[in-house]
Length: 213
Image 1 (cartoon, rainbow, N blue to C red):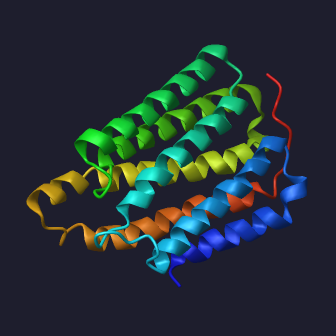
Image 2: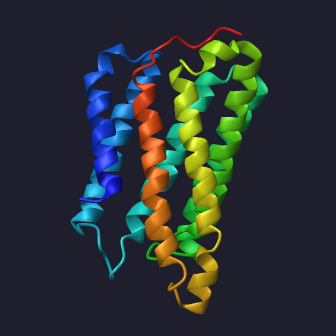
C-alpha cells in the first residue's frame, strides 16, 4: 500500500467518525468527495482503470469534478458577491475548457495537463480569496481553529506543488522521455497528497460556523 492511498483512507475514516459534528453543514459534502477520491485511487492501485496502458482518462474525468467541488466550497464561504461570481464563472470556463481539451487537443488517453494547470491556478486564487477575507474578519488567534484554514492550507500547498510539477509534463511528453520526470513525480506526488489530506483530516476536528463579516 502506498502513502497516497493510506492517507486518503485515513481521511475518509476521520470524515466518517466526525461527520455529524461537521459545521457548517456543507462540510459534510467532503464525505462523497473523499469516497470518490478513494474509489479512483484504489481503482488505480489495483489497475482497474488501466486503458491502453494508462489511467489518465479517469483523472481527466475526476479532476474537473474535484476542482468544481472546491470552487463550490469557496463559493459558499466567500461573502463578496463579485468574488462569488468570479468563482462561479471561472469554474464554468474550466469545465468547458476540459471538455474542449479532451475532444480536440490532448484527448482522453493523455493526461489533460493544460486544463489541470489552469485548475491549479484557480485553486491557488480561491485560497487567496479565503485568506484575504479571513484576515480581515477573523482574529489571528482563532483563524487556525477553523476548518476553512486547514483545508485552504492543504489546497495551497498541494496545488502550488502540482502546478510546478505538471508544468514540465508537456515538455517530457514532447521529447518522449520521462526519465527525468518519473523520479520527481513518484517522490513529490505522495508528499503533496499527504499534506493535502492530512490538512483536510485536521479540519474535521475544528467544526465552526462560517464567520460573520
